Length: 222
Image (cartoon, rainbow, N blue to C red; front, side, top):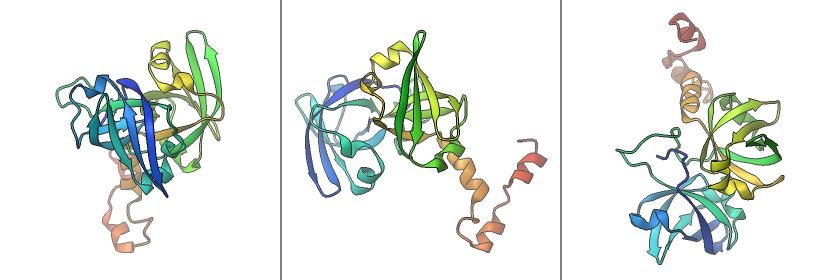
């Protein structure tokens, strides 16, 4: 589990690929202090496992499922990436609950300055993500914990303060670039509970679920 507070920007030193698998060699400094083989690291918002450690670098494997559903396949030697170690049990929880399980990718449609902030407009490739994207709700973009400013029929916006812009790969992003999106896990669990059984067409499963919109309304939750 992660917080979405980026610890440092790493640099891709090398890529070994074959088909839809990759091995990334990532240069880093800060997170190497206590990184061990087997530790989880968020790389541009994707939870990966450190498989070897080198001189200010570590390697991670990217399996086909991750390759297909994230922007990692677009990385090249020299690419910069957001890095965050898994959250320590006794640490401050400054962002929001981030799993590192990317829900899809999005395309940056515009980057506009708004006084001391920069507003990114992003179009998710999957319209189905919009049920989890709400104004003032949490969202993760390339591993960064952010707040949704507003939504439209096809895009949403996030506002970035100068510190976040300067300390993450967003400072290198332009119109047309793609980013990884992870929606708030709480919304995904609620959606699953409300719709459990109905998606499978199994009447027995559907009847076994007692949570519905009417149930929540009757008990004062909505």
